[in-house]
Amino acid sequence: MSPTHTAWRQVPGLAAVMLLGTACLQPPDASGGVPFGLGGLFDGASTSYTVGGTATGVPPHGLSLTDNADSTVIVASGNYLFPGRLQSGATYHVEVAEQPPTLFCSVSNHAGTVASSDVSNVDVSCACALHLGDCNGTLADGCETNVASSNLNCGACNHACAGGETCQSGTCSAPVLYRPVGLAGGVAESTVTGGGWEACIVGGFGSTTPQQDLLEHCSKAHIMVACRPAGSAQLTWLAWTSREVALAADAWSISSNGATWTSSFGQYMEATDGTNFIWWGYAWDTTDPDDPELVLADGGCGPDDISTDDWEFVVYQAD
Image (cartoon, rainbow, N blue to C red; front, side, top):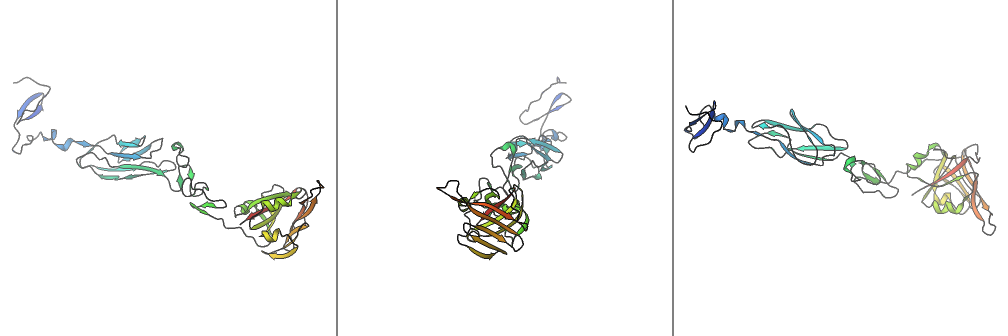
């Protein structure tokens, strides 16, 4: 009996086998393989393979993936591997365990059968979810901007809408102009400003607003006049017409958009539906007698002709 050995070596033309701590030498079988009953120690049946791929756009807090019962967490973009190994013929099915906030991560080549080599093409790609964008370039807060509604980043980061346009479903669009008929009552100011109008003058009934300010600041094609308690978000009455009608230089009375507009340069402007009124009066401010100034000195609102100092008129404009 030869001594017991703790190691074996391959002798040319022979297969070395470790059995019961005794080194035995046996010739290969007729096919050149390992002798019967010992093949499992040397053929590919015991070989296992890894599953992994490349990840891009992984958020700072990592991304969890699952492959059947196996799981791993990708902590950064780059190559990754599942910790477990699979035998040849085993199947894999890789999924994102939970989508990260504001991102959508997809897996390509996510399922298949292991052949006789490592699987290295299960790639993961993370990008901003639908209608979101990383417009500040800070990965830590993810995709923070809704590009479907941001006027500064409409449809894509750094794509700003032009003045007067709003971002709707990722497209810059001119607003549909709010066009009431006659004198409209009890209208939220947000309805007006959200309908394409912008305030150009606000003046108290008891204050003096230079007419020149009105002409300079309210220069767009359409004018809307409104009255309300000072500072209220609700407009008590309003009406609109062309700038030419509202700020006429010559005295006239004309029907426009369901209201009668009467203007007399240097005296007053009035819009009425026969029951309700919005008006302001002009006066000459002679504080400087050498340079008198035409101002909007007072006004009135509604069927009761409210004209107290705690009320005000608002002028809006739109193209």
